[in-house]
Amino acid sequence: MIDPERPIAITMGDPSGIGPEIVAKAMLDGQIRRRCIVVGDPRVMEHAFSQINTTVRINTIRDINAARLADGSVNLIASSSLDVLPPVGAVDPASGKAGFDAITAAIDFALAGTVAAIVTAPIHKEALAAAGVCHPGHTEILAERAGASRVAMLLANADIRTVLVTIHCSLLEAIRRVEFDAELSAIRLAHRGARALGIEAPRIAVAGLNPHAGEGGLFGDEEIAIIAPAIEAARREGIDASGPWPGDTVFMQARHGRFDVVVAQYHDQGLIPVKYLGLEKGVNITLGLPFVRTSPDHGTAFDIAGRGIADPASLKTAIDYALRLADAAPEQER
Image 1 (tube, rainbow, N blue to C red):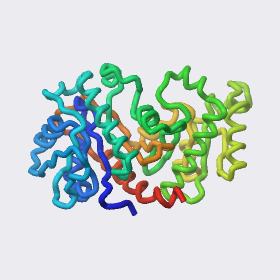
Image 2 (cartoon, rainbow, N blue to C red):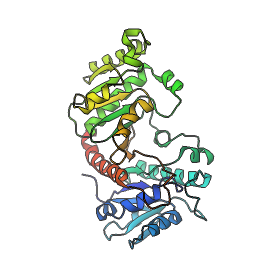
Image 3 (cartoon, rainbow, N blue to C red):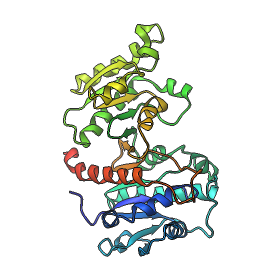
Image 4 (cartoon, one colour):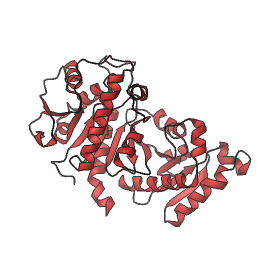
């Protein structure tokens, strides 16, 4: 079990999106308040709490040691200090910078061992770029700051789990990045991630890159030259990996119980099946980091930001996963 004095850190996300609202709504749950702290901008988060008409107390601190986890307060660590509230529902450099500051602060807490895990609310890639941040998303920020050489996204809901070989890049670049080491790394991380979720002997299906998994080389030879050899290497390590399977049917088979995790070759191949089943229960887990990180499986939703209708269900699911993975981490490391 995780140390009750090491809370879960929840970052506020992009202040112009729904992140602050769903964080505030999630923190209305007393059990979550006792296990979690919020990392973000005090002005932004105080406004978010005021918009949901709550009387919960906010304990704004700059040091985790000052957190009061037992008295029902929302503990808020100030990672930035905005002079004015950013615009709602629009790309804004100040929002991008404030969201980035919350992420880096939470990472530093995790690396120092003062929090048990990180849960990140959504950020906006254009806002990051406008703020001068060179990384396209959370995964790349986390990997660089944590010094992780190989990371992967695991997207999960009640029906499907998928791990991506390539993440945030053009489709043309994703095809270029499909190479042996990346394949084998993704398969290994899928195996480790599934075991961390309590699956003792994970069955890993690897999707092909090309239509019909290449059809024996008729539609491309990446399956023969790269993907199949990586699967065989993983099997020699004792991993129950199979494929390459056609990408248009492998997720259906996983949903019907044949496989525990699908390794997808590129972003949309893996995310469309998961998100089609519903955003409210999807969660994103970053594999390969020296700490646990999860996030909801949706974006900043600028179109509904500020309207008070954002659903915190996916964020609460991400918090549940973070608690579960943090509890399991010591056992998985042995």
